[in-house]
Length: 349
Ligand SMILES: [Fe+2]
Ligand SMILES: [Fe+2]
Image 1 (spheres, rainbow, N blue to C red):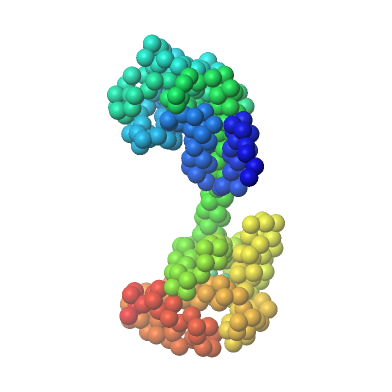
Image 2 (cartoon, rainbow, N blue to C red; image 1 turned 135 degrees about the vertical axis):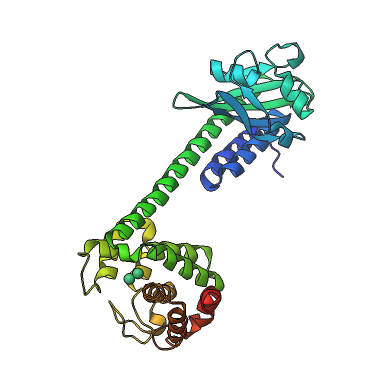
């Protein structure tokens, strides 16, 4: 079997962290892997990632490995060079090796007191992205001997990896935030465009996703249906408010959403949300299982909410509910009847 020397093992571990950055989507998971890599490469008892809370000018433990990891996470350290080694590192933007912590006045004794951890030695590196300090990583208590300059070089490399991970997570968070709020803005626009249909998209999404849960759609199918339900009538924005014949709206919606790559599988659901199981719908007069399952579900939720919203009296609603159920088998897929009843019956039976 191939025997690896210590240096090669460290490089392999570092390389593995690089791969984790690309393949693992979850920041917490990536940081945990980096914590483990610090302990392995620097041969330390503990390791931690501290992040800078800019508003309060404090460092806090985002992740801490070692026996007292959870207790350590409660601690907040003011960003002052004299109050902690991490604070000094963040302010001076350079790594620091302290092999005899008890003789160093910068060491935060409070952290040890709160955590019950006895710190003997610390090696700390700043995490910097585009000149901005994001935090500090630390290896705590070198096993057997003192931290070395080589440990310091490796920790600085790992700090770069943490900076990449944090920046990627921020970008993903910004994109998600933009996406969610853009969809929200479109719904607001639709509600303002047709006030008589206010709340329709949200109610349709609630019924359609309720049915999807009953039918045990997988996560991706569920999400596609969710977005299709939210945006199914967006094509109406392109039509004058009082258009009598609005049968164009599914096709218009598809044209509007076509450039959005992540809606590739959402668009067919929207296109066919007015098809009928017996082939009498629009725009393509598809029938039966030729209509995508999610579109069959959406068509039920669409018609049900649209017609129910016109009624006020309780008995009218109950009668309508019964007559709507009789449409399964002709207008709607009979295989969806149970899921529809389970999703809606408590309100109308
Ligand atoms: Fe529609
Ligand atoms: Fe609709």
